[in-house]
Length: 158
Image (tube, rainbow, N blue to C red):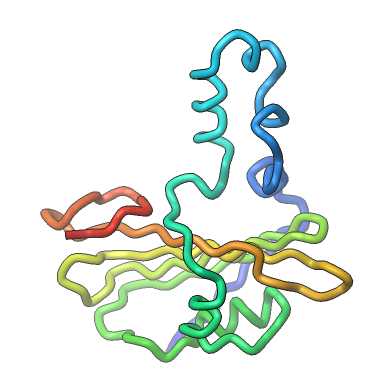
């Protein structure tokens, strides 16, 4: 039996607030004019999409068989996906709201795979004309020891 934990927040700060922001809005004007390296470092630290492999939205919707439209419905559908469950130690899902944006993080850990230990999807949704739509999907993975990276990364395991 799965236990569904959905976490929601109405005010989530900079991490979500920077979606779609330009690099200039993420760092102060002095660092923009004085050091391009600081801009790159600031973008890496503040861009919530950093380190994710981009997933085709249409393929994601088809793979997860999504026919629902609100962030809560999408999160519930993703969590209740009937894919491989053997060996899974934990699964967590969270939703964070900011204005007309929502971010769903779905993490599966302890996968029964010879190279892939964990995966995390980031699903960004935007409310346009009173309707929610998926605007971006990314995937991060962790590998088992000896099969690649043990930190969250958009790279494949060996």
